[in-house]
Image 1 (cartoon, rainbow over the protein chains, first blue to last red):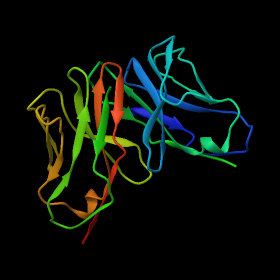
Image 2: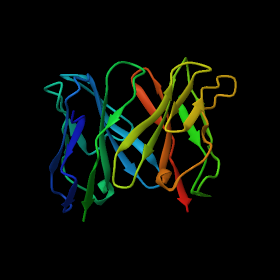
Image 3: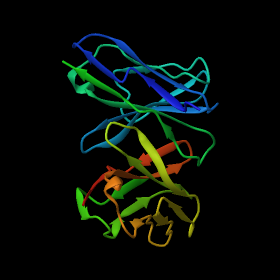
Length: 112
Length: 110
């Protein structure tokens, strides 16, 4: 059982470039989400989805886009990378309300 | 609103010492509470959970009790090991959202 799979593990971008961080889960979870983790700031929610075709903004959505065309996949797009987006990004999913989040192993992104 | 406050780190303990990491929360309604652990280079892993008042979550020697009267969910372990060195996050879940503390780094020295 793979759980939540994120690719790539590491990425370096130049300012202004765009890219997509991939996230896939094989647990048939309706809820999926993206967080960024920065030193001293814990985890901050970027976007989330409660099911295919439904997405919503979290605490820090600016500069990021998401879509949810299938239950399994929830890609995160950086439209025009900025150094402030240097961070570790985690995708997470859960089943019903009150259930724990299951996390991927993260993507470490550096924007120069 | 909903929020989680956990003790600042880093925490350094000798092997076999007793561990407490404090966590308090503010929430509307009846949240579920969680402790997650993050090892270097990895994602967060669920350590334990509690879904209602007075529930005790436990796993791998760690315990935490959901205390509604003090709005707390403190993490404890009676005898820590070097392999417990990690960052620990307290979290609450309310409706669609999770709220995380800022994490407490624990280092256990032999």
